[in-house]
Image (cartoon, rainbow, N blue to C red; front, side, top):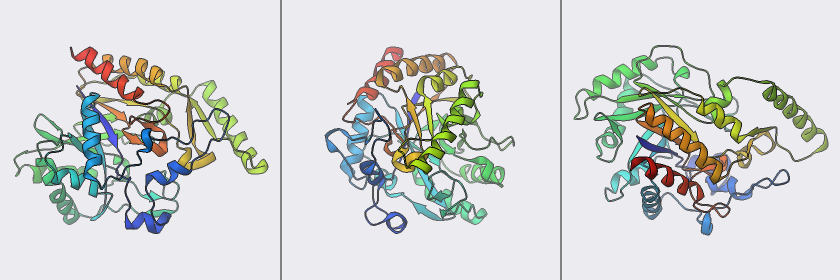
Length: 361
């Protein structure tokens, strides 16, 4: 079983972000200016040794690859942004492709949602709309990805490149697209693609689209589709009260506070198998992006993560799950990252290494 960490490539400047958010914008911009909103709130999150890296620097990818290998993270799942031929944040993956000496297994998740000012994939305040085009665009898209799929470092399942789709329900012709790409793949050396559908916070897709597997994208899948209990209802009411208080009294709270362990308990109760991949998450706090409208987890630490991750890893092994996806390697503005910071050091990475090495012996 491979441990795969989701990977955000927004740690470098692009023309579009400079236009939308101001000159010099990267993911670090919101991270650096974040502030605590209540007593004990861990903000701002600061990387160890002030390592505010730039992903256009090859040495950054080399460092990340070395760190992942040392701490038993088997590969990165790069978010891939394609909007009917327009690519965003594509340079880090292209640098990786060009430099075969960087020992970093990888795959892609097509983050097929619109970019918005609210950072939530909704259709309000859209900055970049998602347009799927037709067969001509699908061909161009496939041909762009083909060199990545053929790379020896690209993660495969039974010889097939693994490719994730983030939101199938918003893709009306999704089944046609999958079928079209399978036909194109049949004329390549890899012959086929292993398509995986992500179960996220968005609507579940009941259509039979031809995916080979699905995965739990945590914690959002559990947050959105888990069972609602009395405590959850109470929390929802309190969040509304906080929202009103923030507006009337100009106070600094957050609308949604959730128990880290409660979410993990629900994750550990889920069933998965060789066609339904398990998902873990490190922490969650998106206040750098959403301020008082954010969701903040309480109770996260390397110790609690280690305990939960070990249970999930053991259960996944017994269920013959080939991939365990971790959210995330470097989602600093959402508070879920494995990279070392000033508070926890290498604690979360050490948890991964400890568990993986224990069960791989």
